[in-house]
Image (tube, rainbow, N blue to C red; front, top):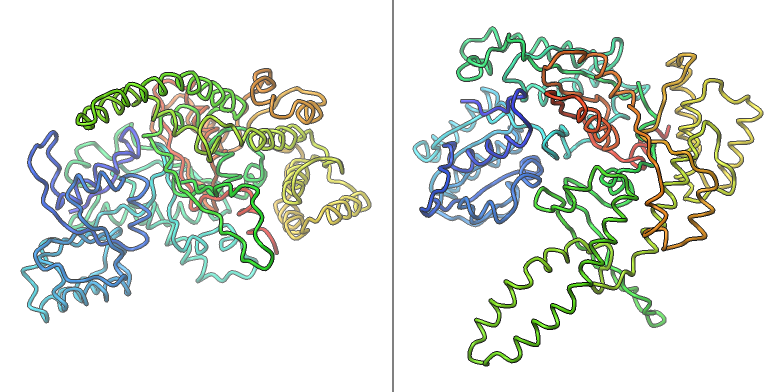
Length: 587
């Protein structure tokens, strides 16, 4: 039995149903069921944890009867009267630990779910362990789930988070990589992509790149599975859908090397900006709480900054509404929400006064009254976690917002095909990113004399020149076309913008952002898809071999909004921001 996601479905959130079915002992859960769920334990490895966490909250797991969720390799006490659901990769270490659990009789029964297909030899190891432990009857079911990818959005996925350095851009483009190492990387990517297809895809790729290697291997694997009548993803309900229908999905495999400028952008859109400047990982952002201006006594250890994490998922309506919006619009919306919240403060005070007047014996009624009347207000509070972390209604972070906007504006609008002037603000990394975009997108490269001057200016600004050395080699090897690609996902005509930002300060959040005009243009990956889709209505998957980013994802989503009846998914071998990408291109 294979539980695989079908690309022809409306979006990747069908993965939630696959997981819920797995957590219900691989039986479709009954909707609107009023009965008590069967209480059980969930055992996963790090891979399984990464797959589940963006899709199911702890509350949802509890509603499905999951009383405990534990890592496979953690110390676990026996719970002999409870069934256990395992969700792990079929690695040697995991299989050995699973066999150890069988010998130790940890649980009442075992439902084994492997993220990708388990080999026959490992399956025999489990069988031998169960036989030796007299636990054959306790192994209830064994499934290959084919869920070896992480769903981040309805239309976005990434292959892996654990051991992502093994399939990173640097790993694929190392000058000293051996054929065996490259084959291993390609096989890892193909094994994950293979999990997607309930319909045989139409594959398109760029020639002479790692993307072509993935395409050849994936096509071979799909065809072999199609010919194997005993074990095929293209049987049953999936076959009924018609793998050779005109709705076969279009798989566009793109190599990262076709566009190295986009990952370096200082982007405008909210989600991409959060990923760029904050610790944003698997739909969770981690923020350091402000510790105030308190000085530690001389010789004392500095106080540790508290960290708080927040899930940015479909439950967060503000995030869902604005994650693809330009940041100036988001800043304005935050201000509007904050003003709305402040307008309700008097109502909150009035309710508190009413509560105090209620009889002391009627505490429960008072609490229910307060909870119901402040429900919407408490929802609004969640919007200001970053805006005012110490005290709601006190916008202590308006300067931080202005700082972000100032950097984003100046650095984005200076992409006018010229190197950064010495006075440009930002960190050394910001300046290196801007210069690399200039260098990549230039029709005529600067002379060696000019380049040396730029290098000196960058060095004086504290920049590490290794990324520039790599880009020089890459550009020489790639022999860029005479006309450069048009980079940038937005452009605006604005003169002297940075000086205005610095002069207006925090008022920019409320006023200046309203006057910015953004112009949308398609990035290289989007233009490739546009040329391939033409008039076809096939669902499409754009997959970037070598790593992707939220900038390309949002650009694709904006593009497809204007194409009625078309649907696109964006995927990548790893997801990185500009800082992570620069680390990979250092020689």
